[in-house]
Length: 428
Image 1 (tube, rainbow, N blue to C red):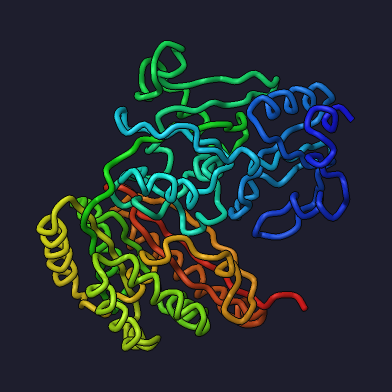
Image 2 (tube, rainbow, N blue to C red):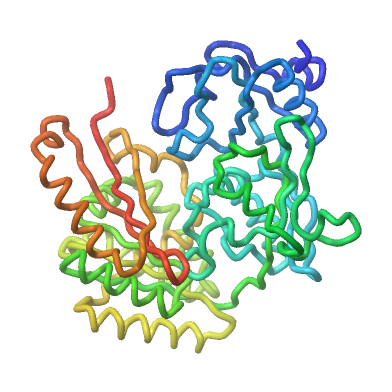
């Protein structure tokens, strides 16, 4: 009743269906179901509601776009209030003089990208692939990666400041802006309190607003794809590319994941992808040429490629991009790789943020990834150990219809991501 009085009855969900829906993530239903779900529309409402809930003995859990699979916002008890943060979706300030943007935590990465585009700027890390639904607060809570990660690292490394609602409802400001007389242009003016609330899955406080760095939108970008015969060769090339800092994105797939990806989309999705390639190119003529290459390649261009690697690089000048790709090609050749049609990174750049239909397999299978970040020197050895583990359980996988693919990526100049992806028949 107190929450309804503060927020309005329409912003407090108490029905069983709503509570069950909001209490699960992509990994599926959980043991516990929240007592209610609230939808604050301002930081002030969020602050008051958190104070009321904790005062009544309830734990409070923040939920963003619900695209994660870690269980970070799944309640672990019944006396729990879930906060749907998506009502906090405003872009508060775009400051191209001080080069920062302040945005509420419930804004999606796609919406932020669109808001910044007319100003010719973007954040260094600019979102996960699920950015059409994934929120800023969720991405900062999960150390998200993808767009820009090979050069700029995880989402947390683009953050300058936070406004965090603590368990008693008070709002803690971090960064230089916490001084009150300063703009939030710098993260470090004393102990780094900002870092405490990044990668915490929301456990230490609810992010209300974040201030992120801005960079000028690069004028040129290009993509390329390569094939390798072994995972050792692929990971060797990826780790060397990471050390040289040559690209903004770099990810790879094994044969199983490639097969799943190639089977996924239908004709409508193919047409949308081609349109994205055209609109993302520099000029209509180049766009039509690139789209024609995609159409001609179809879905068979990786049929004889056991392991593939895909890169995107960007820069202020065309020569900078060309030089970076020339070095990438040299590294790939040294590791026994070969260049193949770059349909996958072209399409991804054209679409940027994909629908969440990718959270199921091409035949409706359940989908769930797990991942680890390891040292660059450990990449190949770790991957070999994981392959050996899965091989030892292959009979059980076969018995249950489980397929396992592997996605890899680099994060900055010092981390390799190994992400096994599991597919299994959905319950009927």
